[in-house]
Amino acid sequence: MVDPDHGQRQSTADVVLYWMRRRGMTRQLFADRMGKSLSWVDKIRTGDRQLDRSRWLRRIAEVLDIPLAVLIDSDEAERRRACPDDREIGAVRDAMRRYDAMTNVFRPDGDALPEPDLPTLERTVRYGWMAFQGVNYQAVGQLLAGLIRDAQAAVWQLDGDERRGAQIWLCWTYQLTASTAFKTR
Image 1 (cartoon, one colour):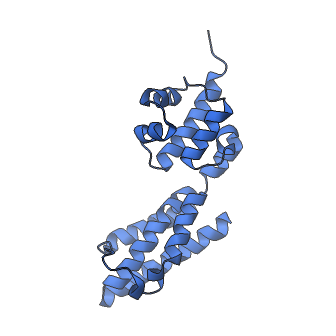
Image 2 (tube, one colour; image 1 turned 90 degrees about the vertical axis):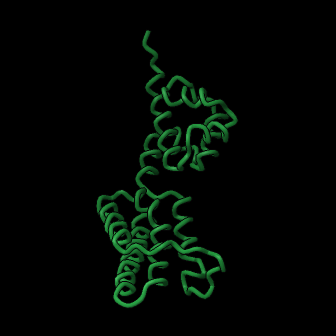
Image 3 (cartoon, helix red, strand yellow; image 1 turned 180 degrees about the horizontal axis):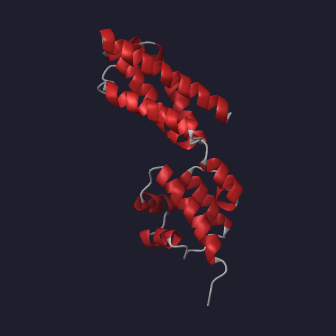
């Protein structure tokens, strides 16, 4: 016998799995935060677990740090999927508000900066712009906070022509940040 609700369960499962990946959660971590077993999570993945009880949907939304509407409204799920979410925007905001973003003087002692790698920085900035032009704001949102930190660190640590190159990529990073903020406001 064909289960008519299986399609809806699988659709909800796909949304849950997407947000687990976006949040960097393993199945085990998600299960632990839900207070459930790994097999319970696996049944969600296969669409065998019915998630129509509002108590479970609320708990899943809480664990994944997403609005409940994302789990129950396919249009909202698609809209949220296409944009940086509040957590990613908060990380960008925090990166821009750091005192050490204004001057290296305020950087805490022992705060290890990433080793500057200009070719990787250039590739990352170019990837960010390609994602932006491809309207993949979610990818840009996940990239920006780390990119801002890495570009700033390269400017602080390098000298001469390398520093000028790092300053150019930092400017492109700030432009990407501003452009993304404008598009997703």
